[in-house]
Image (cartoon, rainbow, N blue to C red; front, side, top):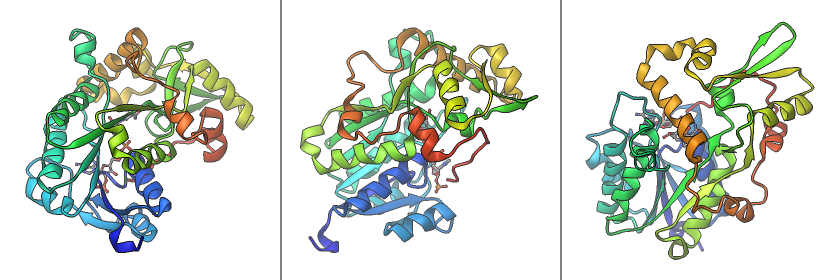
Length: 317
Ligand SMILES: NC(=O)c1ccc[n+]([C@@H]2O[C@H](COP(=O)([O-])OP(=O)(O)OC[C@H]3O[C@@H](n4cnc5c(N)ncnc54)[C@H](OP(=O)(O)O)[C@@H]3O)[C@@H](O)[C@H]2O)c1
C-alpha cells in the first residue's frame, strides 16, 4: 500500500498521554496515516508527532468549534476521540464530547473510538460525585445513537497520576507516597503512554469486529501497599505509603486542592466509587488488553522502563 492510500485516522488530544501513544502506534504499524489535532503546532510534543510522520491540524478541543472540527476530520476514515482533563464545576465535558462525535460524523468518518469511563451517577444511584466519569459515559451513550460504527476504550487509573498529580515527598530519609486509595485496595492501573496505542490500532485494524464494544485497558491490578513495596525493591529507596484517600489525608498532602471544593468532592467521589463498586463494571474482561498486547507494562515494568525514582514529572501536552 502506498503512503497515499493508507486510511487516515484523526486523533484528538494527540499530544496527550493517551493521544501520543495512539499516534506513535498507528504510525509505527505503517498501516495508517495520522492527522494529529493540537492547539499548538509548534509545541515540543506536536513537533515530535510531526517528526514521526503525523500531519498536524491546529484545532482546540473546545465548544463552538464545530466548523473547524468538521474541516479537520474531513478525509479521515477513523477518529480517536478523547476529552481533555476538565475540572468541575466546569461542565463542558459532555457537550464537548458530543460536539467531537457530531463533527466526525458530519465529516464522513466511518469508525469512531471514544475514550470513555463508567457511568458513576447511574451505577451509584447518584450517591457518588464523579462527573469526569459520568460525562464520558453520557458521551458514549450519545455516540451509540449516531449513524456511525463505534467502539469505546476505558483506561484504568494511570500510573502517571503518582508522578504528575500526587507526587511523593521526602521526610527525613524516607520517601512518602500519598496515594488516593486505601492501602490494601487492589485497583486497576495502566500506563497510558504505552498501553493505549496497541488497543486502538487493533480496533482500527478490525473495526467490524469491535463495533459496539467497550474495551478496558489494564496493565496491573495492584494495591498501594504492593506499589510501595515494588517501588522500594526496584529503586532501592526507602518509601512508605500515606493516606490521601480521605478528605483529611488528601488535603494534608495536597492542600492546593482545597482551592477547588468541587475537585475535592470529585476525587473523593471517584475513590469511594472505585472502592465500593469497583472501577470497572463486572461485565468487563480485565485481562483482554494484556492478552492482546502481552508487553503491556505492569507496575514493576513501568518503574523499570520509566526510571521513575519518586520525582515529580510533567508529561508536556
Ligand atoms: N488520570 C487517570 O487516571 C485517568 C484514567 C482514565 C481516564 N482519564 C481521562 O483521560 C483524559 C486525559 O487524558 P491524558 O491524561 O492522556 O491527557 P493529558 O496528557 O492531560 O493531555 C491533554 C491534552 O489535551 C489537549 N487539549 C486540547 N484542548 C484542550 C483544552 N481546552 N484544555 C486542555 N487540554 C487540551 C492538549 O493538547 P494541546 O496542548 O496539544 O492542544 C493536551 O495534550 C481525561 O479526560 C481524564 O478524565 C484519566
